[in-house]
Length: 389
Ligand SMILES: Cc1ncc(COP(=O)(O)O)c(C=O)c1O
Image 1 (cartoon, rainbow, N blue to C red):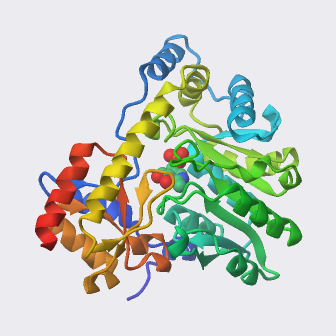
Image 2 (cartoon, rainbow, N blue to C red; image 1 turned 90 degrees about the horizontal axis):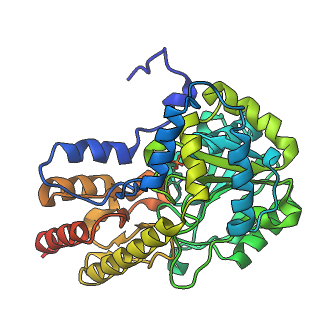
């Protein structure tokens, strides 16, 4: 087939998103049990919505903000970084971005030259792979250790480093596996980065959602990593603000003007009304984070219990964090996860995401999302029990 001559090679290399494809297919089916989207189902807390409405009424949102974001927001973010991430910062080290995703894209564009290699522990959030490809970098997918709850394989990471390696990029807590990399492991990863002059780009979107005593650790809090870490965060998950498109990144002060050069052509600045909403989120009660976490924890426990009852179909690693899990499909048909998930949707009316969407090591798996109601989990598993019987 001839490629469309109008389209750049960069974009042609990017495959259609399996997540969006499953969403589209799911819409064609009545009364689907939906476990395929990593989007909080709760609405944004009232005080945040009210602050946004007030900012509109008071005429504060009609213009651009400073490219890096409102100073008062960056000051508040700086306090949060100290309180919750143990990262010492000043506002000039922070950029407000259009969600974590735009911050990650801007960081990659600022750091990666064509042909540079970026190590991604795999399976990983598929957007990260696309971001590297869009910058004409080369994603190097290094498998995680499934039997150890998809933990980092530090030896394999070391072995994959060569003169073209520029960065390591990961999300912890992880989408899609729910892994939380420990402080010890991340300190060892930091040593590897420092020994080899590598950048570490983190996606900490699920920072508050960890369970069973596992704690989130920010590699950017290690003083020696000051020049080597770019840490990306978001309001999307913590405050159920998916559609507001607001996040931020923290990096060494000297990098900020360079990252801004990549941020400005995409965004000029983060959406100003959302910056006011984010300010209210940081200044207001943090109870919603606790409430979301408690809900995800009981939803996770329910999903694991229901998976235990399907142990001839799925094997799984209990997620330590995020609101996602990544069971292995034990049936022969699982070797093609896309066909498996499409069939499950069509014949059992359960929407999941094929593991292949998260890199080749994701094949034979599917991703299940537990940021849904317990009724939705029970509905999906009742159907799967009948289907696989
Ligand atoms: C790991 C990870 N990072 C980033 C995002 C998106 O974040 P944002 O809405 O802040 O761009 C998601 C959404 O699912 C995600 O799973």
